[in-house]
Image (cartoon, rainbow, N blue to C red; front, side, top):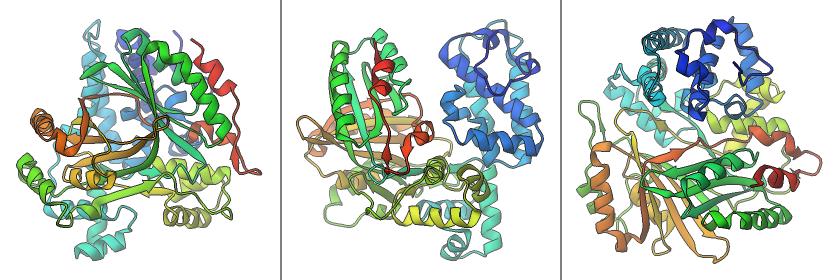
Length: 488
């Protein structure tokens, strides 16, 4: 039996806790599922000091990739986020799930085990009170705020707001990650779209691109199995970009390739549609009425939209060092990460870390946002628009929905612009949403509509921080970064 752990050895007793098929399976998802479970139990049993020491080391690498973990079962994130009381509950629940699974000689569908794990966070079906919703709405409006600011804006005491905030964390109903300004980091963000690709080709492309340190993610959609996307952040060197494009020509045999540069990205969170009594109440009729009036009246949801322009660079007097990049990378994953942990990871004092965090925020290198994890918005639609409507206009129209990620794209060959929106929805209205979008297809300038995202998480900078040249203030790269990994 082999494992994927080299520096840290997972004791054999943890493997014995697993069902046989999970212990011996070699499918990629099973490997990631196994590793995520093993790492949780391993970290749980360590002393607090030992655990913190390992976590600080892991935060300096792209541990999700290196340890082959499932993104939504990130054991490091779990220990950084939850209280000991919640960790004890998770440990007990995971143990009971594995015991039940061991009763079966073979797990026919390992994803059911994965969903059972996720139910740990949703099965209690936590009730959100009016005050808790009020705080969530305020955080969505100002995710970079402090407890003091939030309490003032919602009209509650600081101590009361703190208690509400801690209750919300325990209920696992939100996170505060960030979007990044890649231009400020001297990176270019690209989407590569490959159409007409077959299943074998997708598997091969996924394997090849995920080996590249500059690859953020690969994904497809259930509604079109012959479509494949690759997201890359590469050094903003003209030679690097030219070489990448030349290399991509070798993949044209898999399908038709279009390369887009991301010029803007944004996110919006709208919790006004959530009722503490009835859950999510999304009316497509209300949305259509709102969108038809929008050109004449300001949107009531614009204050919940957070944007980044990927063509906005820093002034030449701003210098970045590897310690800065470690801070930025971890703020991307969790804007609320403990200052002392960021201090250990970056090598700066807590006071300097706090100062740098505020500077990165002021310069819009990191832009935090509220990511709701409230039961009911488990489906997604992906919409591609032509140039008919402005990107900012589309973002403000779709800000009606609970959670939206938007990208303004430019075809690097034709120069034409398009918009790419990822919309989180309730499963009960997904098909009606697609139907309504099709009815208004021409008006909105919709080119394509897909549903059910199938892919990997989007990586941060951890995997290539060491490629940063502090003296020359640019990224070191070589042709081998692409060629050896992408040989087919």
